[in-house]
Image 1 (cartoon, rainbow, N blue to C red):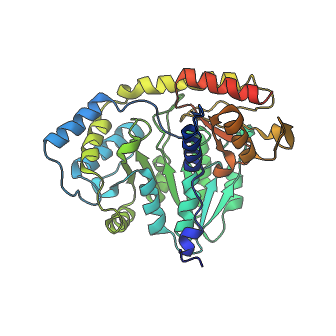
Image 2: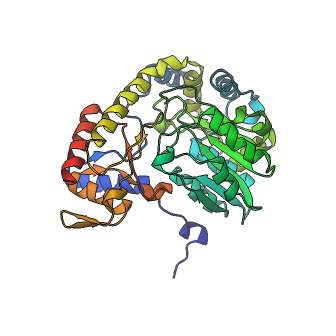
Image 3: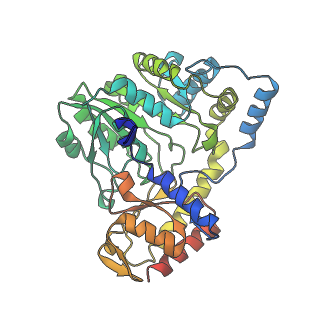
Length: 394
């Protein structure tokens, strides 16, 4: 007899976390596994941010925090939005949460009703669909491919919209593909959304600073859609602060108030020490983290070069984040070392078991022809991993 709720029974397990768990299991068995499955920078948090956290401890920050964040942090978020994104937000439009994932979940919970429809340009981060399901909405994927650099067209968007459509997710630079929408591409998509005034936009910009060419354009800069756009960001990726768990939104004030109300009944305010450290992170010039971005770009070029040496793997060149998303459909229906590869999940499992390299199936991201490879690892590990993969596919 299943006594669990329909809500939890309908919720999928995160494929990225599942692969991480499988990796730990194999390592516990003594296997030398190279983990390229998690989206986590392999750098240490910069010293100036750690110093701010230590100062906060010494200054006796130890009490409950305001549900929506310290005023000083919300003001720092506003300064950051203006400096980096040319977006004008006031502190009453900002909500600080326990990571960008909670920020996204808050927005979904306060906007979506049962039966509402969420549009997910694919590939998309695994939790978008799960969060939509938790909010009792349905979701619809808008497919793309490596040939279009994993970006959708305005016509595709127009064709996907129905009277039930309430919310669309954009994520640029994108997890898992690393692709980035240009200003012109966003403006063209905005022309479609302008005709549908009941649709809201979540613009997930968590990878904005890990960007290798040109400006990262924020969707909320499109004036006609500013009041329907919720900008999501955080410090996990760019500042190597994944475990600090600080995310935030800039949104219309009525949405921000609703998110504060929701958060007040679930987690309340974000960790006090992490908030004080985040003020230092956001107020610092972006140049202070450029060394990480430069290293990621170098690794990207190495990985793309090595993947291109493997017959049957199709690549593009992502211009942001720290992932490559190769198309491996060439191997579907083929038998390699007595293993039949029928889909991307089979391919990822084969690579894990035969090459001892952990990746993530594209099925998890709405792109069944691909796998995600994170290059948030050392150059030596990346070279070894790609050599193992190449050998396993011979």
